[in-house]
Image 1 (cartoon, rainbow, N blue to C red):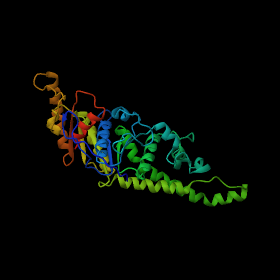
Image 2 (image 1 turned 180 degrees about the vertical axis):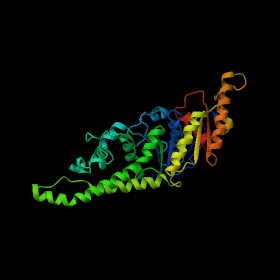
Image 3 (image 1 turned 30 degrees about the vertical axis):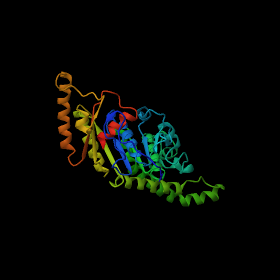
Image 4 (image 1 turned 45 degrees about the vertical axis):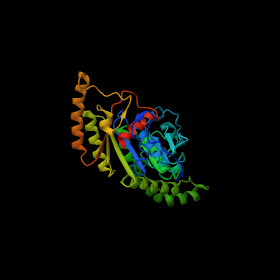
Length: 353
């Protein structure tokens, strides 16, 4: 745990809005939802507020289409790096190509020379490519980018530099495949271990028949990976440690997709306590209190376009309140300006507080 003396600023300069210092959240916060709804904005705002009270916070993007560096207006590398001197805020954008090349075990194939003998147990296609050995050591089988992201999550789970990790996930479909991986990998690793046990006698025989040593596999690495996958699964299912926050916009299709995502998360037994409705056409003061001096509110009286959009949003908001009853539904207003940079993110954080 990093100990730092931090004097948080309670007011944004020239803005009559109280800025949250710290966040009420568990150790892991994941933002998920359809692409383009504002997951990156929410993750960056949450991480910024989290770090303001001295909590060492890492915000990491697993979305191949990164926008975290643009949102925070600072270059962000592929490895966790401190990006603010005055607060303990760290950030990383996982490069899917580099992560896939490294594989789940950092580039080493623990199956040694036996991965070609696995057949279906290794998940290989009919040409013998894209098997479990490829996934573990950096192949290109489907889902390898999600597997690489999971390897990073496993790594951050054990990183004592951070007291909180905020994750900007990829769009819904990629996120669900990521969440399925612990179950899939556990099953595949189980079959690999059974295979290795059955081959043990044959391996000993090969020593005498051909001389020399047979290809070595990383049994210890597989055992370690399986243990870490189990811990990741347990962590994601523990509401005291993890909060998966669904982000949506007030439109019917977004409500429907968010409902579907919530149902799938419930199947995985992953807790969802917060739903964020972004880009709501209402006054900032109605959402978070206070009144930024340059906040431009939608004209719901004289602007016909604004009125019709507000009617659409009201229907979606009513529907979301019904569907997500029992969850903490937060609203973030539609800003006239692009949400990027520390000042705008602090306004968003005030809405999430």
